[in-house]
Image (cartoon, rainbow, N blue to C red; front, side):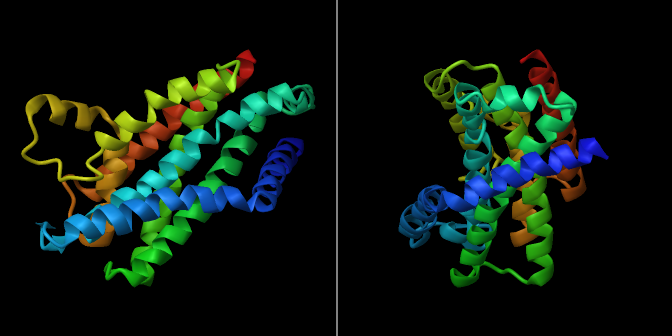
Amino acid sequence: MSEIEGIYAIWLREAKIYWREKERLVSSVISPLLWIFAFGSGLGTRVDIEGYNYQVFIYPGITVMAVLFTSVFYGIYIIWDRKLDFLKEVLVAPVSRASVFAGKMLGGATDAMIQATFILLIGLFINVPLNPLTLIAAFLMLLLISVAMTSIGLVIGANMKSPEGFNLVIGFVLWPMFFFSGALFPVKDLPVWLLAATYANPLTYGVDALRGIILGINRFPILLDAAAVIFFSFIAMGAGVWSFKRM
């Protein structure tokens, strides 16, 4: 029971910090909204893909982007916790490192899902075909994605010594994952080298699943997409637990 209580305590601490720092929510949704309304609306007047204007087509991908950036950047708080010596206190508590990681991961996933919910609600006002069942399915898929991406962020944060090093590594992780995920364009008919990079990107399957759920446009069966995201989540969580044990 102490392990569950430890996970809950760490999650509650992260949730309270997030609730007190409301500017994190505001800052994290500005970029997705700019992509949807500025970039999407600009091309949306000229470009139609699979029967949808461009703004609606990229909406699932931009929603995943919001989860991706929030989840991965959450790893930097591990570095700040280490600098403030809070992490030392947590790591010597009578709970396993796996429980510490689980509490942190759930805290980051909660942050990401609050923002994802906000972006999903925005879709109701831009003619995205959403209904209650679609929203529930989209929420669950985004939750899977947030678990995987938060775990990646924690792995990077656990192995970095400074915020500057974290930001440098993140630059080589975030943008390739986003641009090679099919968030901004359909993955069919791509050059061979780009298609290979896209298929190797785990985020591709999350974007494909969410677009299939919301718009009915998907390259792979949704169950296959979900299985790929779940498989990658387990790998990322395993790497996260291992990284926390090394700290």
